Length: 308
Image (cartoon, rainbow, N blue to C red; front, side, top):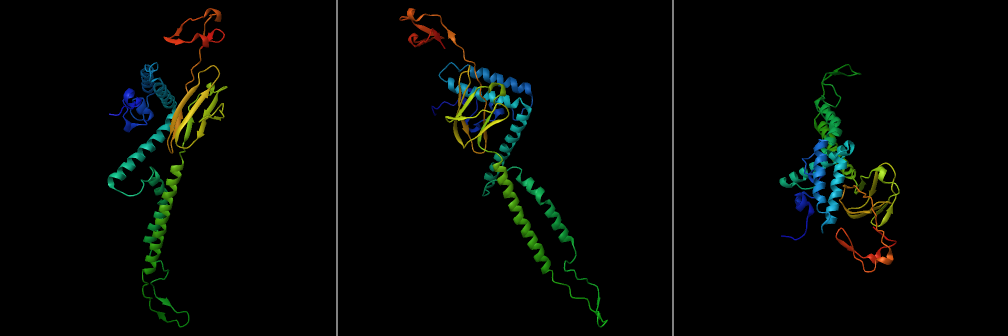
């Protein structure tokens, strides 16, 4: 048994095959739960459980999961964000089912993106109707089977021999081939546009009122913080380091895993910084011992009689 600590599995009962979990799985809810009270209570229970590990050696893992749970709660309790997330999750689940069915059937090639077949059917419906009309038409040669009169001799000419249907078969075959090629092109175009509709990057679930005077760094590089409106940042797949600083608050730091074609949500929780003022003159400290919450502090490192 591996000794690697897995906070999702150990603390929340989410096995590796279900990771990364959806927001609903993270909160222990059924998929697409729509009751706001149920969502809020589930998130509060998760957060209370995770806070019990904040003071131990797994404090960093506890904080990371607390941030994820807070982000899930904020998203699912806001109707527009929940609807957008649900659409994205349904596409993901449909794609997984489609790929699983393709693997079981032993079919070659990639599975068609969910919804592409329906869109292609809508596009090809007029062409299908045109083909049906062509098949139902009489001889397309335009030559009538009735007796024709010669304009010069006035002699009745016998009706012409029926034309071979080869021309019509060729016509229908050409149209059918063209429709097939067009169908393939449409499906490929839809698949390409579907795949490009989602870009890798960060999506910040960051209240506007807490952005004032804040600074944002992504992988050590400063990024402008918009005071209002959506805040996103495109980046390639992989681990991304996020750091947010704001006067009067502890810095927020998180390492986010960005996956190909999927936006990663960052929900920063800024905690106000508190200073403990100790009126202890420097001359009286000597070899004094200071403990705060059971942790010893070097009194020689205190500046101006204050400790954070």
